[in-house]
Length: 454
Image (cartoon, rainbow, N blue to C red; front, side, top):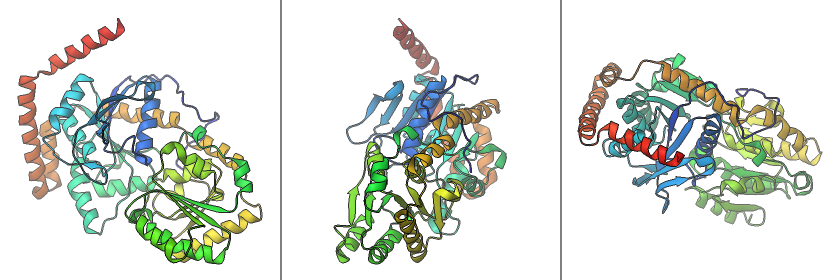
């Protein structure tokens, strides 16, 4: 288990700490109002860091009409940047074009630490590079696992991860499996990589015993309907389980390119009355859907942590999951059934869980919720994260010439490309500093702070 226990129930309030306070920018393409594990992680981490006493802002791209500056709960300031979104929720990687925007924000907010999230986020990697060249400390959290053999993984590991993390001060992974994966992919020193699990706010994921015991046997799936999340496995599993168990129902929440194939499966096997497709769910409706079931199925083909199984367990559901990535580290054995990502194996595991449900052998949902509340809670995650921030601040100050040296050491080919990018960015920074001096921005920030205090 990666999580540490606490004697207190889940709480939003956090203890004041002796570290910092720091001015922190959390940067990612993935944030509210979008729903997902990274989005949830950033939001609750920001809330708890603010409660501890740090100044936190979030930088992400715009979502529809949501552009500019917005304020969320607890005074969390969010910059929704007017960047072009290209694919799968990620902004177009511009390298140079984002520098004036990010520089202005970092100076106006007096940022000390830039914390990027997700390997898939172009904004996060650009912010880490630009922030490092401005002399700011940088931290990166990796939420995903990648392979080493296919072309996309090789390109991502080489072009993005190795060079992007070469000059990052500290790295955080959400499981020990994820740490090993990131160290190998990024060619990092293991001493600068920390393992801090995800968490959930368990008071938002409470069980409903009446539905758990009185509803017909229902299996719930919540996740993006994409290949990596095992949507193809789900498509093969559902007809086989429905054929062998005539009363079981399925609820599928989520959207993605594989949704059409699942709807075709439902049509082909005439399962409209037994398989409910809900589409994309707002985060505040997840508990309501989970409470309709007794069993949660996770079919991911690769996963660093998987917050959805923790949310399901907190609602009292028994979890049946593929045995991949960091998933075996997340829940106790009595809370989860692990199988290889093979349809027949998962079907047998689901049928066994259904039998246990019908015989009343599943763990009481209230007991399971209490146990999860003591394993995963945000105040603990925030306190451990600020220790990583302290390590980043304690290291030597970033210097752009060291960036070029590390890029060269990683390989002449792509190294020259990244060195060229650094030289262009430093030239661009010099021009910006001349026409828009950093001292001017800091004075404006101080004047605004004084006006607010008055």
